[in-house]
Amino acid sequence: MPTLLEYINQLQREHRFRIKMVFPPSDKQLETIERHLKKYDALEVGRPEKLMLQAIPMDFPQHGGHEIVIVDIVTRLPISPHMLEAELRTLLGAAEGTLKVFGRDEPVQKEIEKEPNNSPYEVKTGEDYRANEANTAKADDASGDKFNQSMLKDLDTANKERKDSIRKPFTKTTSGPSFDETKDGQTSPIGTRKQTIPNPRKGAK
Image 1 (cartoon, rainbow, N blue to C red):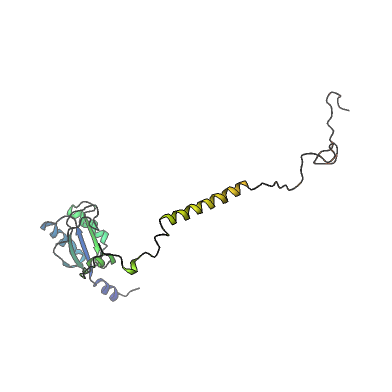
Image 2 (image 1 turned 120 degrees about the horizontal axis):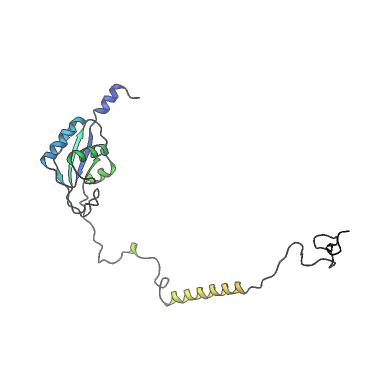
């Protein structure tokens, strides 16, 4: 369990967040954000910046073609991004899905904030295949008359094997005693005693 000093030091850490909106905030809305963040001991509230226009923004795929506005903030107290998002959406009167809050230390946000790779790309369209890109399979093994003849030959062999298995004679195998008939023709096949059935016309004796 952390001591009181360690707990205070944890509270003194800087927590970085990024607010993303699909609408340009007004000056009054920015003042509302700054005033609300005072309870989290805000150290910095950046000015709104517009991201590059995208056909389908990654964080707002349902709002294609909109300019995404970001506001970076730094607080001394920790905040749950989902809680801050709900609070700001209520204060600004923003519709659900138009304002989101992310931690800037999240892996996805770190990847977004990386500087773009400005190294030149090598164009491959319209060029011949290189030796390491060539297909190892031969053309005759994948198409052509030779391939078709080989495929038909395999089909004939498979059909012949199927027909031979159907024409194979069936041998009847039996196991255990047969109850079709008795040994002597008079007694029951189950026992050796002759079965007598009384005649109801003669009455009981």
